[in-house]
Image (cartoon, rainbow over all chains, first blue to last red; front, side, top):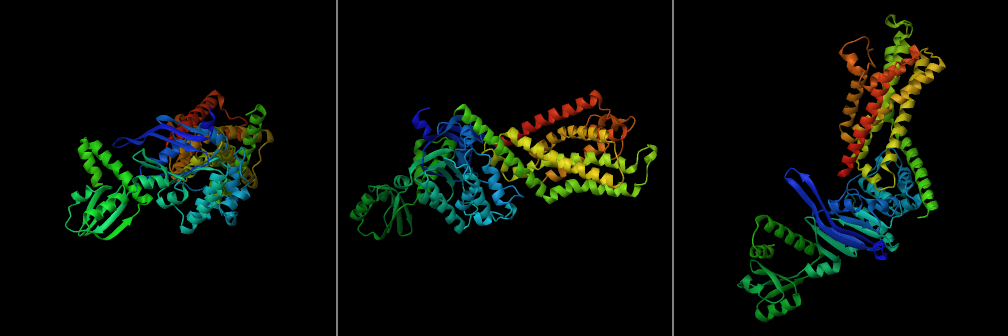
Length: 325
Length: 260
């Protein structure tokens, strides 16, 4: 084992397909992702993108058809046996007839070097519920107890599959506050989420998935910059959108009545060109793209490409579809 | 990791599994609905049937008292029910994804099943003891030697039911596990002769000898005759059921953990 391997998580060439009534569905296709120790990475993607399948393979719950998983230089099961991995799976609840404290103690006892139970309850904000039976918890409280269970091994890697899905706004806030404590302790965190805002705010890096592939991977700021085109809106009647698309820095133009919307790869160049060529443009607005825009752009491109694959069309058609999307 | 460290970790896991088993038992004995249904039903049945006939000392000319006859029948029935239902509770754990959560701990599948079987045995033991006490309350008394060998053989007879319960727990959903186990218990009780004695020959007698509940009932006959009459046939049937049900349960477990 090289030092670098022991310092990161490597998913290499991971593929997984499942049988379905319409033939085999390829859930994950030749996925490569590397996560360094101490990173907080968000895994984003629409439903069916392959996020949960990827997480299941990372945790060793699912055997990949092809590819390898290495967690700090070990196999998933070795890492789990060593107590190096904690996870909160997507769906799931708690077994009944134990108090919160008893349930957390029961799981913690299985790990070689668990966090003290009191600390776990405190950290996840369930200390006040310690003596309550698990079947009497609300959905948000259940999630927090599941979080405590994920932290029980004092893991180096924490994996969370849509952790805040069942939480209300307040629950979500406390959850991310305790997450920040953990990041400060140098934990490596991978979380899948539907909330782009969460990825934007809490992750160092985002991995965007669509149809089983990684469509973007990088610091959230970088993803926004590369694909999160800025948009220029202006009132500009009587100009053909084809003309506008020729302006430098503009990738596509749309017309809505008198208004036009220009998606720009370089909004600085585009605004200069626009004002030089069309000084009648009024009510100009430049809007920065959020991660959400990047997300839509990237996954839409992927959809268009997949559509083209199906119809076996030429690259010209593909380019058209890309522009329409 | 050094050899000593390895040994330390293994010892740690063993004690960890002990803590895990303790809470698993605690939670089983706390589930009143489960506990009273699996323990209470045979008791209620016993008093309903046996109490009115408590002074019948020669049931249908067999020379056996009614309280003793129904007690040994229901001991097997109650223990079998407790064992099957314990394993079947896995269905509820699966429905909340708990089995997947446990796979993210160092607890091995082997240890997980051991704890399940242990829990089933303890529940069954409580059921057995309670029925002995009920029998004693109606004046049943059995020589200590017979009592011991009967209990021992009943406990051995429960092994196939442990495997069958775990199998069912992996095959059905939490919604259907109640009817599935209820039906299975009734079927085993009926074919095995728990409720009606199977004597002589005929179809039910031939089929009966192939199910584990038949031999479970025979085990409790030690109380009456001093011998179970298991012979090699009894041991083979019981061993075969245990091995096949355990293999099927292992297969169902692997299939279930493939993808949820």
